[in-house]
Image 1 (spheres, rainbow, N blue to C red):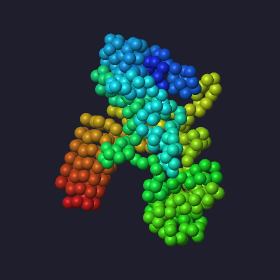
Image 2 (image 1 turned 90 degrees about the vertical axis):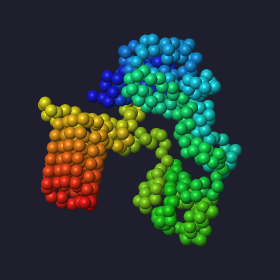
Image 3 (image 1 turned 180 degrees about the vertical axis):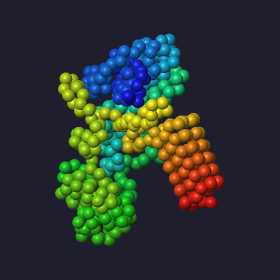
Image 4 (image 1 turned 60 degrees about the vertical axis):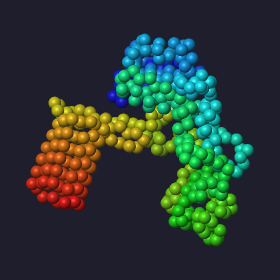
Length: 436
């Protein structure tokens, strides 16, 4: 079983952002049918690889296409034409600058989109020489960000089931990454300066050269600075007055960075990061992309998977989440299934329930009536005939013990073991209460 079993996606054309969108849906179990995909490069072959569905425009739940308004009309992929074949599917249209506006027909590349969005100006950080040109990331990142935005918006549109049309601008998807600087410009009318002043941010946060690359450190607070000096072997220069306070370190940053660099060049980047972390100083090694292939964490998560690309078996990234099925008793047979979805380390079962006779492991929505135990509830429990192990919201009526309640217990015929809020009525003892 997969998250999107039975969900049908039709991906039309050779657009790379559309291929990213289709890949994301395929990775979570959707049936993706590709019409005219590009497979001219290893990246495009990977994104458009895997089983190809047999859905048509008429049977799709979601249709994804990439191109400017004129391009879509010329190729018969504009909303008016697609609606004739399928009036209900959600449509996702991806283009460099969106389907409307004075730049809607302008061509664009990964390079021009990064520069137009303002991201390229920020990528180098603050520099000593303003003649140093901005840079852009490699690997068609604009297509990945545009495709990710399209997949998220497309899923929401498909859930509405009203034939929504989603207009995705890759330019805008990139510009939102610079939201901090956009907010600064909106509030002050001034842009962030690329010219470095002192240590660049006034907090002694920097990147140090290592024997095998680079490591970042962040000894922002005085106690962290003292711990960092000890981690470096308590060098004599660390006791000099010019480095005594944060203000002093910022004012003499160039000299300080040179001294730290002399030390760091004699050590491996992972050793530097581990030593700093052991001293409670935030630090991490700057990893090369190839190093991820050897990551124990990613190996444990089974992030990479073998795929044949251009006739060669290579390891490619998978989905950044996993899905685990947990058995659960059902009404008739005592067996059932509840999905626990893990997304970047966050676990939970989200259920919107009216009445249930099944145990609730986790409920993030109100439980109106439960005849089985409520293990954890973050919303009101209106009535339950079974124990409540933990409730972060009011329990209106409970015929069984309430082990822990962070909100009022209005009525219970059984003991309340712990309550952080008032217990209005109980026919049994209250073992601990932080409120009346």
